[in-house]
Image 1 (cartoon, rainbow, N blue to C red):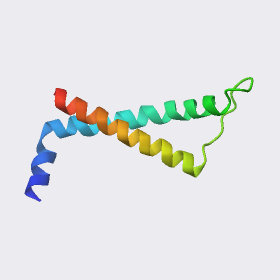
Image 2: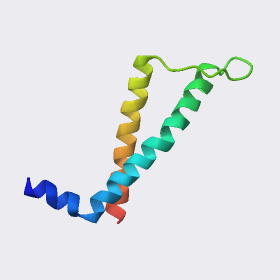
Image 3: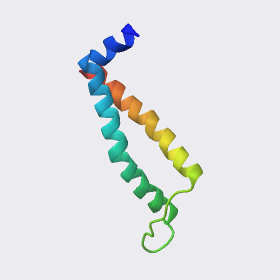
Length: 78
């Protein structure tokens, strides 16, 4: 438990967490738009529609992977 507290008290871990959360927040909108562009690429105009549950899971898994990479790289550059 002490090791966990030591990492939370470390300011660098806060940079990782903030970077991770900002990436997730901004990227959710971008991925939603990309999903709809890809879905409607052969049609005139873009009709917004919600991804299926499976597509949301895929989007979220990819976002978590890239948010982790973003957070780790920000942490390492600190």
